[in-house]
Length: 177
Image (cartoon, rainbow, N blue to C red; front, side, top):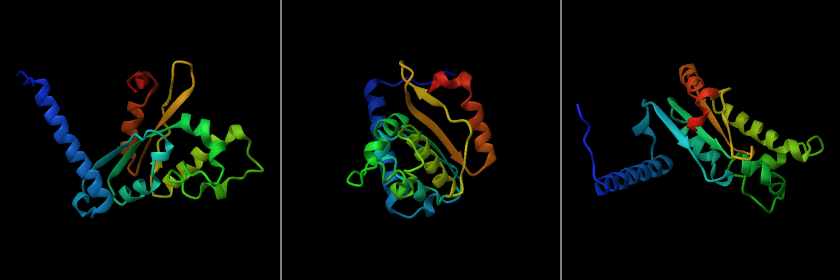
């Protein structure tokens, strides 16, 4: 059986239609009732431009669905470069990622170099408080110079999803990311 081929304009129309559906869906999810999605299996793939756009409240809202798993690009580059600047209460870029984080920083115990890992661990703890288990398989994606760009974090409530992710995120598959 041969698959149909589509012209560039047909592909573009399909993409525009899909994007509209996607935008409607996320808008509906964030503002409307989640009843439409109850009982469905879902995977939320969150790929924010930087940590400023990784909203914990969106994850909280989606976490109300019992059968949802998450794959999140967590920007380690943004975190490492800017966390010391974000300690300033006048700034707020990381406040949506981990609400109230500044008040929890044990500033007398942490060095500047250990702040990013502290923040990431606190974020993971906040995710776990929603009833999720964070996978031990968290590929760290680096640029050509060896600097980390992001960590691909997967979390779910069901062990089967974690087992599947464990197979996907193995070392031999990292070139796919």
